[in-house]
Image 1 (cartoon, one colour):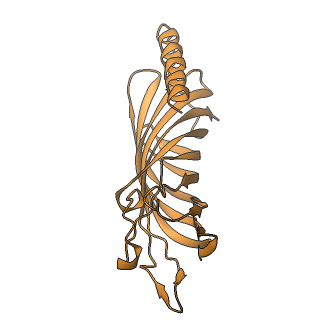
Image 2 (cartoon, one colour; image 1 turned 135 degrees about the vertical axis):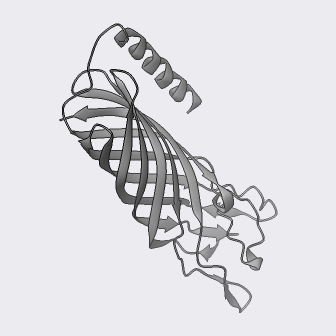
Image 3 (tube, rainbow, N blue to C red; image 1 turned 90 degrees about the horizontal axis):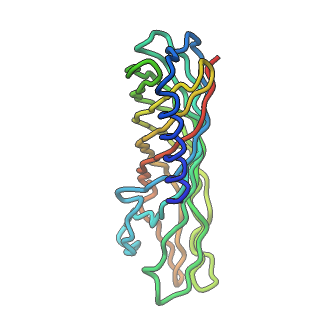
Length: 224
């Protein structure tokens, strides 16, 4: 992943350096669509490795995952617009804390859509920053967990309200084509009804799982 990020950064710097000598103006086209991807870093309880689930721990055990997103936007004004994001993320689990038992897991994942306003700050003739505050809905998948060959937690899906705050950097290669880099913070708190069977006893830990993560992505887009 680091090699891919460094390669993308090198390509982006090279293109920007080559285009710096040209006088491409900000495109007059108002619609834009982009596709981007990159690592997604879980934070807070979603990343926590606290294994004390019997005390209603909401630890997510999430490792660094990946995010793929599509942006569809409309520039209402040179400094203001609206944008929607189609999102997909997936995260494997770190179960190294459970060394005394054999634990196998699936993964966290979700897909969804968020939308909202953006403020655009042009920086020169070819580049601009977008500052966004978005909200929407996500369909979240909790991982199935097997302990010593016994099904401990079942996989489950849940819809949840999602919020996203972030910044995009867009660099116009031509009037139609541009590069995009994103840093986005995403938050959601899906509710799961996940019973955990024991020796003739069933208990349920806190059914809401906080999912906080920071996506760092890059890609390409089209103005039209």
